[in-house]
Length: 219
Image (tube, rainbow, N blue to C red):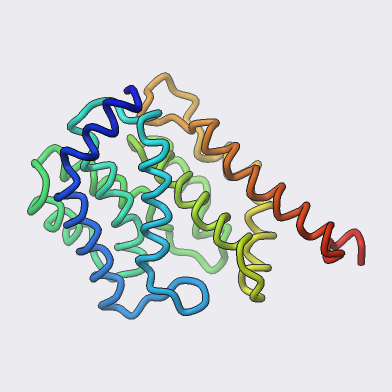
């Protein structure tokens, strides 16, 4: 899809996208979920969707997929963190989208919901990543989620961000390989433009650490 066509669709559906945004923000607020150092969780959702706005034209196959893509992005943590079930998400989606769109949107959310596990590796194991690779738009939304988290973790200096940015750096290769379906289906694509944006963020952080004398190899 051309960027021009994609941006035209965003303008056409702006009102409904804003409704989805507001409802997702309110959902996470209702369970008192925060992001980073006391920010409302909607801050993270908006960062994820900014990636979808900037790069969605690279993966969106048709006009009817625009709203499911945005719904899936805004609600991607709703089962994992906001106590919704698959059927709950489907019910919300049906109130805003067609039946086919609602199913696509809910499948994105389901695919991005971590498995049960004691560790980070168990919660995001091979079964989890296989589900992402098999679900249209899930690899892209997961990539935008990682872009948002990496960007934020590289922008602040509290201990949790310092820890997580190192996790993201170490996971980069495995993460990208795990979400890459290696498919000709554009809906399963992992756009290199987004990958490069994440890499720029990580490289920029390494350069800052080197200038500040805080890089581990300078200790």
